[in-house]
Length: 162
Image 1 (cartoon, rainbow, N blue to C red):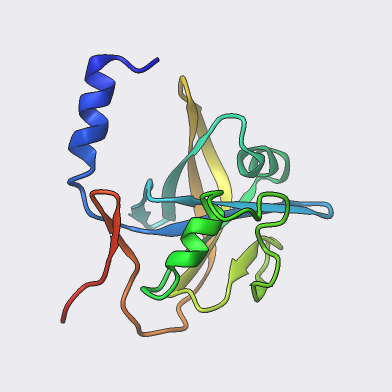
Image 2 (image 1 turned 135 degrees about the horizontal axis):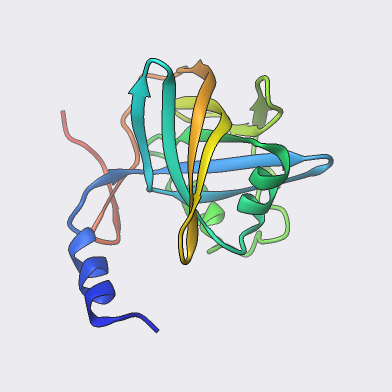
C-alpha cells in the first residue's frame, strides 16, 4: 500500500512531461521488453544512461541474466507500441509479435520506426525497494529518423508542436 507521500509524488510527477521508450533485453532464446519513461542521459564521456525497472518483471530478469539492455526511443506514431509494451493490449506472452525488430551488438531487440536506439551494457545496478536502478554504458547508438517524439504528460500521449 502506498503512503500518502508516495501517492502525492505520483500525482505531482504526472506534471513532468517525458519521452516514452521501450527497454528490451534477451538471453538465449527469450526476449522481452517494457515501456519506461524513467530514462535519463547521465554522462557523455563515458556515454551512460539510467533506467529503472520494476522488480519481478521479465525484462529486469533478462537484463540481470544477460548484463545488457536496449532502449528504443519511440516516435509520435508509436503510442500503440507503448501500450503493448506496457502490457495493455493482450500480447503479454509475446510483445514482439507482428512488430519489425532488429538488433545491434548485444542482441537486444530494437523496434523499427523508433527515433533512436541505444545498446547498453550494465555498468552499475542499485536495488531499490520496488525496482532496480540500472546505469548502462552505451556501446552502440543509431538514430534513424527525424520525426516527432512520443510524449507523455498527465497520463495522456501528446505530440510536440513545431
